[in-house]
Structure formats: C-alpha cells, structure tokens
Length: 487
Image (cartoon, rainbow, N blue to C red; front, top):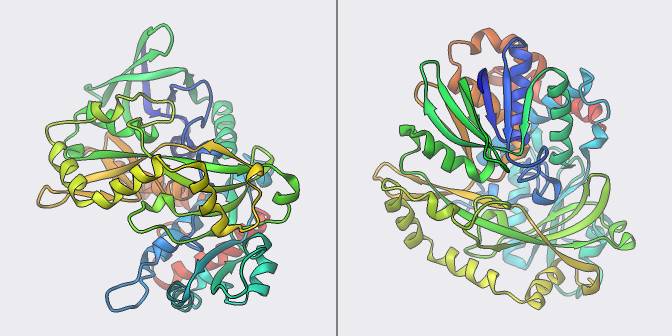
C-alpha cells in the first residue's frame, strides 16, 4: 500500500502530539500521519506512572541552579526552563479556551513545589538560591524557612518524627503544578483524530530512506509484519529512547557521534488515603554525589488518571533497553563506528556515575526505605510498594574534539535540509514540549515560519516577542494561564 503524507510523526507521545496539534492549526490541509508501536496513545515515557509530572519550571529542582566557582548561584538555566514551561502553559490555555480540552483539571492541578535540604552547608546553599531567584518576576512568591514548625504547615510528613535538633530548610512556591502528560496526550489525540489525522497503532517504523520529496517510511504491523510505505515531506521522530536508533537508521550526518546512555528508574508508591491526604506538594531534595539529575529524590503527591497517590524516588537503575517495552539489544544495536569513541570517553569520564548506578541496582529494599525515611521519618514500610518508572536515555554527544560528553536535558537533532528531526534526551522534556516543538518548526521550516508567526501567537502570545516587552507579556500570561488552567 502506497501513501502520501505531508508529515509523519513517529510515536504518539506528548512531543509528537504537541507538534501535530500546532501544525494542524498552521496548515489545516496538510495530511498528517502518526505511527505508534503500542496499542494506544502515551503508553511509554508520557504516561503518568512513567513520568514525574512535575511541570518542570525550576521552582524546586536544585540542579538547575548550580553553585559557580566564585560561590554565586547561576540562575540562567532555571529562568530558561521556567520560560519554556510558561510557553507550555500558554499553549494549554489556548487548548482550553478554544474548546479542544473542555476541562483543564483532567490533566493539570495546583501542587506547591518545595525544595528540602538537610545540614548547615546545604541550608546555606538553599538560602543563597532563594536570594538569587526571589526578585525575578517568574519566581515571585517563593518562600524560605528554616523553622520546622512552619515547614510542617507546608508538608507535615517531612517534619513528623524528625529530631528537633536536625537543621533543615525549605523553599516553597504555592503556584507549582502537577501534570498528567498521559491524559493530556489522550486529549490531544482525540482532537487530532476528530480533525482527520491518521493514527496507526501497533505499527512500527522499520526503515527510513530518502525519496524525491523527502522520506520513504516503511511501516510494519507489530503482529503480522505486514508492510506499507508512506512517502513524507517531513518526518518527526518523537519516539522517546528509540529516537536515536531511528535517526541513525535514517543516516543523517547530524546524528554522527551521538550515543545514548539508558537509565531506568523505580518508585516507592503509597495509596494509603490517610497518608496521601496529609501531603499536598512536590518536595525535591539534592541528588547524591555522582547521581544523574533524573535521580534527584522527591516526595510527590501525584494525580494519575484521577487516582491520588504518593510517590518517592526515583531509584536509578540500569538496563540496556531504550524503552520500557524495548529490547535488551537496544544499547548494543545503537553502536556505530562514529559513536564508539565518544561513548568510551564518557564511560571513562563518568566512573563515579557507573559506580552509583551499580550500587543502586543492587540496593536492598531496606536501603531504599532509608532514603524514604530521610524525607518522611514516620513512613510505614507496609504502605509503600515498588513501581517501575519509565526508561530514559541520556544524550552522549561529541564535542569539538570528537570526545564524548554526557549531556543531561533534551536536544533537537535535525537534518541540514530540515526534512527530518528528532528529540533526544530526558528531563525537563514533556514540561517544555510546546517550546521545543516551536524550535523544531523554526529549524525545519525557516521559509514558512514568518508566515506562521501571527497564528502561533494566537496559541502562544509570548512567541517572538523581544526585550522588556517579552517579560511584560510573560508575566501577564502567567496570571492569565493560572486563571484559565484553574491554578
């Protein structure tokens, strides 16, 4: 069977569906096709139990504000991520106001964001971080306290049972949020299907080859391996950890030297209603020395598909799979002559990380409970069960000297002609989906972007607004989106 499409999206997660929604508004006549190997939408990295759902805005994530050599706190990354999250909020608000998602409470709710630290040295760091951020408009309303009694009013579980002599400190931003990206993805898919976008579930992309117009995409059914082909002008690979292998398969020069380092994770999950009702916040701490940023411990109240739970973790682990439902051969299958050097260099440079992961893999349940007790001293171990989190593939990329660098975060890799692009990496990921997808449009459709700007601003009012006016629009939109999203 031969098909023509203007755009093919590989993967039916939050990234592909966000981009598809934007393109459907910009070019309603284009034919859009979504290929997903799972039976339904958002069953991998975007699903609620596979995703931290923090609504990453750097309000509580301490790794986004590192201490510099001179002792000051670097805030640039935190501000950038917060701005990206505000773009997502603007886009989601437009979805609500345009009637595409009638009830925002289906996927987002208010959840205060807290940072919690122990010991005088860490308290000093948190205090300086607070002072560095408090005057920025995007972080207005941040509170700081070293008083256990006050912290107990914010999050009683982290104080109950703790020695009064133990020095602790916390910051809080009440306007934080909890996001169920799985539900949001489902809502986007419903609207896209209503608008005529074609979805092929339980199908995988087996091959990508150049064609006269763009790309010839070979698609096979997961069960019978029955093939069909789609000739596409543009391909977006939003396939989570599988994006690396698919971009390699396409043979684009821009992916050379890139590798992936898979990191798995597990949570401890509590469904005891009495415990859940006493904690309404996302409380982030500091990562262990050598731990990847995605392993920063946090005690979260989560709402996933309408069910309220507490989650603590994640506990890092290792598997060579690139997807939770992937193959143990994924890591080895991604090896190429051009990325073996960078991957070996990263292994040598990050021996501490490897030791940390090995320790985590073999950690006993008691060791994991001890980490929970650090945040929740009175935790009853019988209330907490193991839950497997989603798989993340951290980026390994070559630097100017072709030596590998382990990069935490997300990155768009696009071909020089703009005919194919894919997203690599992990956190903050889903929370910044709208901003990242606008970056994809700018990189891959430079000749069209000016003509699209007015329409994009209907969806994202701060888009391409520069200078002080950008700050004014961003602040105005913070209040507007809070009202629309009921935050």
